[in-house]
Amino acid sequence: MATHNSHVDVLEKKVTELSSALAMLGKGTDLKELIHVIHGPGWTTLAEFAFATTLLEEMQGHANAIARLTSQMVAASKLVDVKELVGR
Image (cartoon, rainbow, N blue to C red; front, side, top):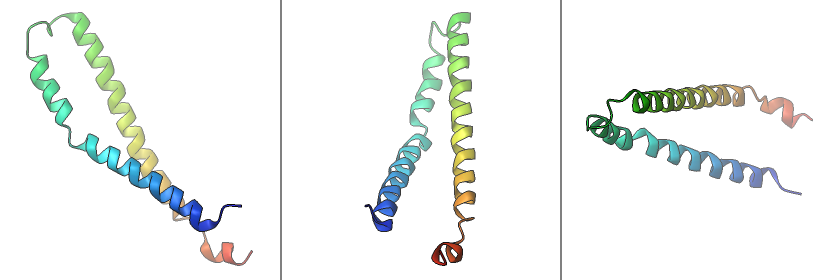
């Protein structure tokens, strides 16, 4: 059976990996490049506008969801009562 420490190690690794991935996204360099691209020819049609708008709105929604989930997970983790667990 896995130990508490091995569970913590797995969770720590997953948190660190996710944090690193989000930090890379946080640099925003790809989206800054997109700003330059959309000023080029061909980005004035309704089709390009519709595709880009939809994708950007969905990406923003996912970013908001990640921020909300992160906040809720941290808050929920603080509700764990160590004294209650030790007394079992």
